[in-house]
Image (cartoon, rainbow, N blue to C red; front, side):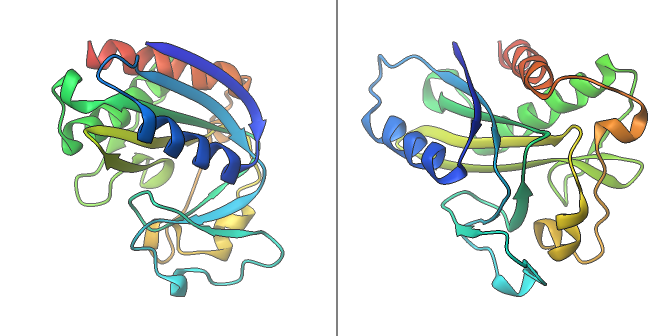
Amino acid sequence: MIIKHLGVQPYENVWHEMQHFTQNRTSETLDEIWLVEHFPVFTLGLNGRREHLLNVRDIPVLQTDRGGQVTYHAQGQAVVYVLFDLKRLNLNSQQIVSHLENAMIQTLADFQISAEAKADARGVYIQHKKIGSIGLRIKKNGCYHGLSLNNDMDLTPFQFINPCGYENLEMTKLANFGVIVETSNLAEQIAFNLIKEIE
């Protein structure tokens, strides 16, 4: 398992690199986890409905090929992309989503914060406020895209959309619970917990 730290990158560049990686991978290609932060952007999933974009102002909007509805990325959010051979790992789509949720839940537990997943609204929640989101694309027995966990970012732009397609869904972040951690370190902790989860 290769872990790559990409720093802060434009969303579109990393997205196309994930597509290229997945398209060209073989049965011998090692699985990779990419840790990244993005410049401000709203992204729509494959079935994302533009009606959930309420007032995007000057923040760019990208239609992507991941699952899910609309979300927001910006610096201060830990983004963990998983470029996995699901067939080799013997995982189906529901199992990998659960592993991603559990990796975030365990990471929050490492900071003494209790969080939970919801089967009817995928992601991770603290006291009914959403802190972690998931969106995946599965192709050629592999997956790409992944998860995002709000660390210490301006949450205001989430009010410009219906996050994940839900009206009035309140978002939160790790910093609201008195935890101060570098976003790159948080992403790395999620990656380590994910590796333990799938082993």
